[in-house]
Structure formats: C-alpha cells, structure tokens
Amino acid sequence: MRKSLKKHGRKRIITALSLSEPTSDQSLYAEFALDIQWIRERVWADYQTLPPLVKDTARYYLSQRVKLLHDGDSVRPHPLSPRPIPYLAFWFARAFGLDNVEVRRLLGLSLAYVCLSSSPRDDQLDEPGLVSPQQVYMARWFWEKYFLALKRLFPTRSPIWYIVSKSMADWDNCERSMLFQNLDEAGEPLSTSFLRKTSRYLVALIFPTLAGVALLGNRPKAVNAIRRFTCYYCMGWRILDDLRDWQEDSSQPTANNSSVLSFLRTRTGIPRGAALTRETVVSLFSDQAIVGHIYSAMEGFFLAAKHEAENLHATYVTRFIDQQLLGHKTECFRIAAAKNKFSNTLMQLLQGEHA
Image (cartoon, rainbow, N blue to C red; front, side, top):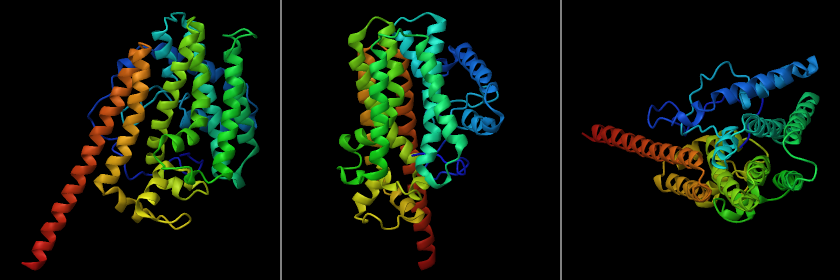
C-alpha cells in the first residue's frame, strides 16, 4: 500500500521483476526522453532553493520514490513494475493533439509533483508517531509546485480549479476513511465498491492533470471519459500495489485497508484482528485459485481502463496497458510453474521416503 522511510529496501515474495520476458515497449518512454530530462533539470533547480534542513528528506523522495533525481535512466521499465508517472500526461497529450513542448512538459511536471506530494502524507498515515517536520514541509512544498505548474497552464476562470478543489476534498475524505472507518466491511475486498473507496486518493492525484489535457485540447466533453479511465486504472493499480506491498501492509495499523489482505481474510475466514502471518500469506498465495482471482480482478479493471483509452484514441496508453497485462499473465504462469515444481519435488521426496 505505502512505503515507509525504513522499509523501502524490503524484499517481496510474490514478484518476478528479474524476468527477461516480456520486455517493455521502450518506445513508450524513449520518445519522451528530452521531456523527462527537462523535468529533472527543473526539479533539480527547485531542489536547490530548499532550506538545508529539509534537503535530505527531499532527496529521499525525489530519488527513491518518484526517482526524478535518479542518476540517468538506468532503471528499465518492466511490465511488472510499470512507470505511468509522468508519462500518462505525455501519452494523453499526444492523443489530444497537444504538440506544444512547453505545455506537455508542464503537464508532466504537475503530475510528478502531485504524486510526490502524496509520498510524505502516505508515510505520515503509516507511522503517525514518527512524523517529522521535514515530511510535513515537503508534502506542502511538493503540492505548491504542482499548483504553480498548473497555474502556468490555466487561467483563473478555468474549470480545472474546480476539478483540483474537488479532488483535494476526495483525497482528504479517503484518508479519513482509511484511518477511522472499517473499510474491510464495505463489501467484497476486490469489488468495485471497495476499491473505489480505497483508491479515491489515487484518482485525486492523477485526474486533474489528465482532465487538464482534455481542456487544453478543447475537448471538455472528454473529461468524463478521462475520469472513468482514471477510476478504472487506479482500482486495478490499487490491487497491484497491495499485492506488491502485502508484507509491509500486514504490519501496519491500516492493514485492513489492503484489498489483497482483506480478500485473503474473507476467502479463508480469518477474523478481523487475528494475526495474518507471513507463512499464512505465502501458503495462501500457493493456491492457484486465490492467485487467479486476484489477477482476474486486477485485469478486469485494467481492461475497462483500456476500453476508455481506446475510445479516446490514446494509443500510447492502450499499448502501455497491454504490456502490463502481458506481464501479469507471465507472472501468473511463473507462479503456477513454481507451485507445480514444488509439488513434484515434494512428491518425489515422499516417494523416496516410502521406497
């Protein structure tokens, strides 16, 4: 769900990031290399203006979380570790005919900064007793930079400001719900109703910038389609994020907000509040029916998002989602193969014992 300052180097059990196939469609990223370089240079210039006492905290979020200050672009995107930020802004801008380089880059910058603003807030939610003044400062500073990027693109009377205001309210409401409500009682954990509630903050981050693409492209009627795309994509992304972060989430006070952990509890009848150990979760992940159900739900939301992108003729976005789906299918096959190999090895050992 969320990554703490202490745990960003953790190992994950259900991953296959070292797979050499399927490979990402690198043209989705390479075409915008100069735009990324511009954003990095702009962020670096902004970073230099920060007070010395917050620079270490800022550098952590910029180099480890969104990786805008990462040296070069040595991390090759993989379908199992997708990188839609800030590329979604570039891909939709291309689909809506926004060829102005400065406009495209400011849209990307705004998307990067708003996602950065969420990282300190996420850490504050996960470990409220360890909140530092530097984290509070950076959350506000990143959001201010997001606002200033949009301000350069939109006039005062633009409808974008209503969208930003509404999204901020949704973000705050989602955080309060995750802190103080029993979201695992809101329905089936992989259902649309549960995931819509727990992914509202993700939608609030991404939607204003993407809606801005439609407004700048003189296609205001497309805003609703972009909203649907964002909602579907974020619901699928929420499952993926919870799947990747299940170990960390299981130790957090907000563990019941994890769609994956809540699903495992519901599926196996483990009561709320009972310990969900690492051994139990790994054992459950060896059940192909459970894994298949999780990936099927995730795929359904991504396919719905792809459908909206197709209707908007956002070909870069549909190619990106296709790569994700292919990666997930490969991962499922690998998990099944690993289980079969383990079962065969165990059978051989048992036969050897009784020979």
